[in-house]
Image 1: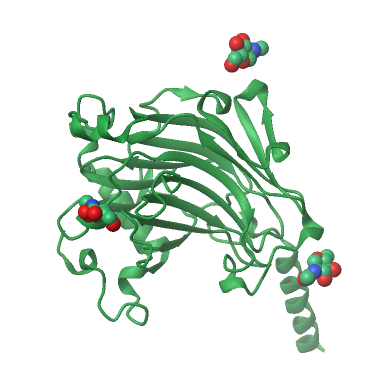
Image 2: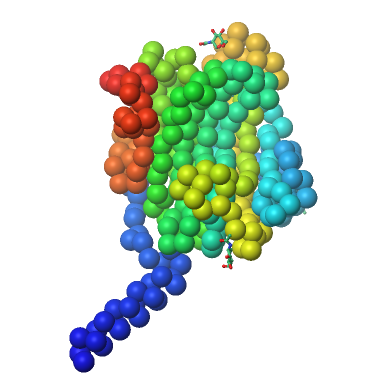
Length: 311
Ligand SMILES: *[C@@H]1O[C@H](CO)[C@@H](O)[C@H](O)[C@H]1NC(C)=O
Ligand SMILES: *[C@@H]1O[C@H](CO)[C@@H](O)[C@H](O)[C@H]1NC(C)=O
Ligand SMILES: *[C@@H]1O[C@H](CO)[C@@H](O)[C@H](O)[C@H]1NC(C)=O
C-alpha cells in the first residue's frame, strides 16, 4: 500500500511539474558580474529608430512609439527596419518573447544588407527559436559575410532566464576589431576579425531589423513542430532601443574615409573584451551553449578556418 501511495504521489508530482510554466522548473542561474555596455548609448524610441518593414497592421506601437508589440498571427508576421544604414555600430533591444506554446516561431534581431547586395550580402543574427512543450526558447547566433551563405556559422544556447517573463537585452557590437553578441550585457559570442575569417567578416553597411515570423519548416527540431495557430496571436514586445553607428547611405563614403572618426564603437574600450567580459563569455559558453558549428564534424569535414586558428 505504502509503495502504491508513493507511486501515486510521484506521478501526481510529475503531473504538477509538467503543468508548471518552464520558468519555475529550471534551476536559477546567476551570471557573473559584467560591465554594462548598454548604458553607454542613447536610448531612442522605436518610432525614432525604425520604420515598418512588413506586416504593418501587426506592428503595434505602444507608449507613444517608445515601445512596440510585433505580432504573428494566421494572416502575417511583422517586422521593423532601421531608418538608417550603419557601417559598424552598437545595436540593442530589450525584448519579451511570447509565452506558452511557441513551436515554429522565430523572433529575430539582426543586421543585414541583403536588399542592396543580393549576391554578396552580410548578416549578423540573433534568432530566438520557439519551443514545443516542456522545452525552452533557444537562442541562435549566426553571421554571413560577403555572400558566405554556403557556410552556416550557427551557435545555439539555452538562456539562463525565462525570456517570456520579463524584458531582456539582446545586443550586437560590430566594429573592425570584433563582433560581440551580448545578452543582458554578458558576451555569449565573440568573432575576432582576423585573417582566418576576413573574407566572411561583415564589412559593408547594414540595416537593423526586428521581426517575428513563421519558421515552421525548420525552427523547432528541424521542422518537426510547426506553428500551431490555435495559440495565436503571438507577440514579441520591444523597448529600450539603442542604435549608434557610422550612418551612411552610401557604402563608399564609410569605407573610403576613416571609419574611426565616425564610429562610436571604435574606442579602446570596444577593441577587446575586458577581463570581466571574458569571464562572462566563458561562463555563457561553458554552461549554456549546446551547439557550435566549430564542433560539428559531421557537417564540416574540414572545419571553417577560424575554428582551427588560435585566437
Ligand atoms: C510623443 O512622441 C512625439 C514624437 O516622438 C513627441 O513629440 C511627443 O512629445 C510625445 N508625446 C508624449 C506625451 O510624450
Ligand atoms: C566579395 O565578393 C565579391 C564578389 O563575390 C568579390 O569580388 C570581392 O573580392 C569579395 N570581397 C572580399 C573582401 O572578399
Ligand atoms: C493545436 O493545438 C490545439 C489545442 O491544444 C490542438 O487541439 C491541435 O491538435 C493542435 N494542432 C496541431 C496541428 O498540432
